[in-house]
Length: 175
Image 1: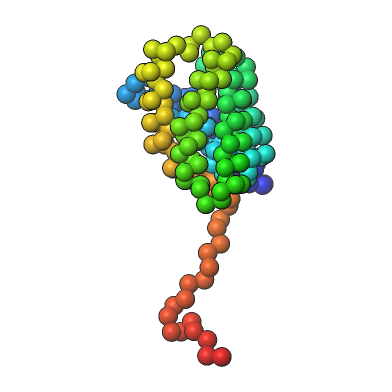
Image 2: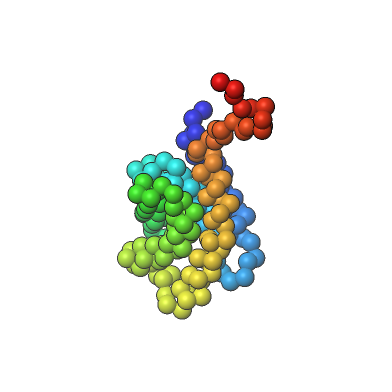
């Protein structure tokens, strides 16, 4: 089984955990971290912009039909597609910026979701609601980003080969 298939299976599991556990946690405020968004960002950091956008679109379409679905079909698909593309594109242009890109995606995700919701006429986008939940959503995403993005990238990348370690004078060659 390929790394992409394993990641898709774990992404489906992440969606179920998001809906059944994370969204029901009694965290301060009304927000919770978006594990699916962070997993898509981790995937895009390894595979690039095209694959990140495709995985984000597929994950978004699936999450659009998962309950509770109180928005237009395709809204999450658009948000996750944009996040996947932006994360992959940033890594293609600056390969050493992985942690910074992951944190930027954690902050940009809720902002893009609000912008897309406003463009599509989502009635839940109100200034008073945004001022209360948007900063909390960004904070929770920032806190969850390091472990979730690292785990997603590690699964997609696979085991990393490490160079052999020298053991001191016994490892030196006398040629």
